[in-house]
Image 1 (cartoon, rainbow, N blue to C red):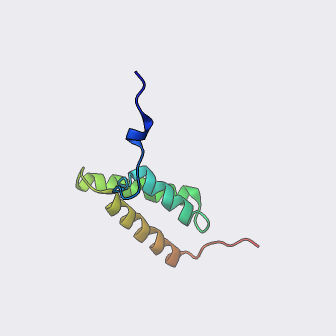
Image 2 (image 1 turned 180 degrees about the horizontal axis):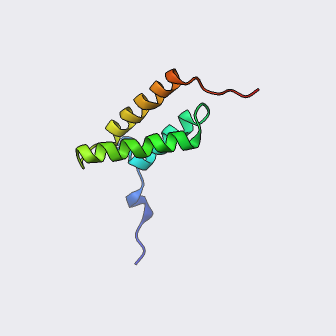
Image 3 (image 1 turned 135 degrees about the horizontal axis):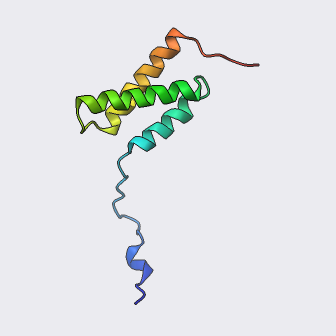
Length: 87
């Protein structure tokens, strides 16, 4: 039986609930944001290390906490080692 599609479509005034970010969403954003100034390998290592470190603290760590930790580490790296720029 084919259902009426209009029953599933949003109408003006409907509440829109944004999905919570996942670890993959956070990782994707971080890569796009920091890859111009840091290499993929460095960013990947920080992402893996942060996930492992947070996982050892608590299995229920939120993607938001993961995002904050990775951003802090990449920002600290930026201050310690200036990004390489090519002309």
